[in-house]
Length: 56
Image (cartoon, rainbow, N blue to C red):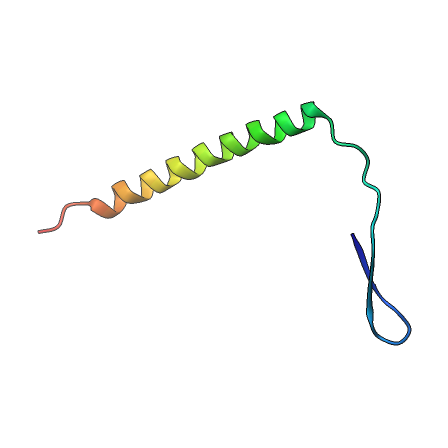
């Protein structure tokens, strides 16, 4: 979606063609999402371990 301001200052939107989406594209995006989710979970576990520490 492209958004522009017309001469009277109002916003106008128009669809733009970005091409077609193939099954392989969706599978790649899902794989990337799983990898990123694992990284996020790993980072959160590291933070939890660091915050537990030893308190006297």
